[in-house]
Image 1 (cartoon, rainbow, N blue to C red):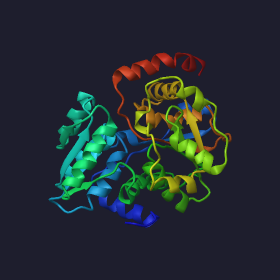
Image 2: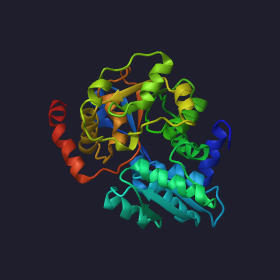
Image 3: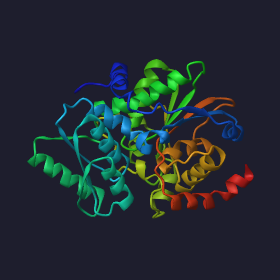
Image 4: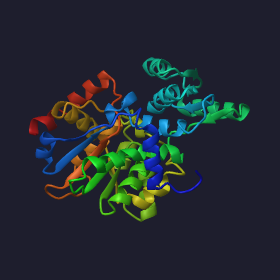
Length: 338
């Protein structure tokens, strides 16, 4: 698939994966809408299998491979579990490279889906390099990248199809998408902009890891939010680790640049507040990357009109209980005011 992603690719991906994925609901949040003065819809992708959107892209890619294939991937997060489950469903062997520092719970979850986990190195970059080295030695292994692949992007784009289908009677004005490597954003952009060209796409980075945002702003000739410099000096551990990517994807970024209307950044405290608001006001348990979209709306990072129809993609729900508890404490003042 060495060409541009299109709507037919996304529709084909949906046919490949629809019997195994969950069609996650688009839920109207009365409570949060009343706070914000808009009509807020939440795409509950944290209810997806493996509790994250990554399963869609992994299954879209792996389902194109013949049985008996062996795949390899590198991840310390949702991609590893998505690949492991997708491979199991397709009758394919899966080897996941994770750093030796990976949490035991994530290692156990990945193994629980049937993957062979190889622990190597002190961080993700070292684990990924080991994966790539072994791929050079074993030509029978097929690499499944987390975002830079058209089949993967097409799988993530099925989220955009579902949003349009479920809100067909609504005038969707804005869709807010979290951006890490850009696979989700690329796929959703192609689906939304092809079918609803006047719908606005807002992309969100965490200000602590603003690499795609910085490239986009530079390429568009736009100003940099001062929040980026403040956060970069904070020394905080990223709450939105799912979008803490050091470089934008080489295949995905052109779609971000072409289709995204506005790119914004949110702080760690803003993400924390969004996690808490979602848990307490909408009863949704969402990880930092997924909650970044609501943070952008809560803190008015972009302008929107009264009663505007806004869709926030809540991309995943893999957050530990101790981090969730910390978010509650940080958000007490905001919740008291609202």
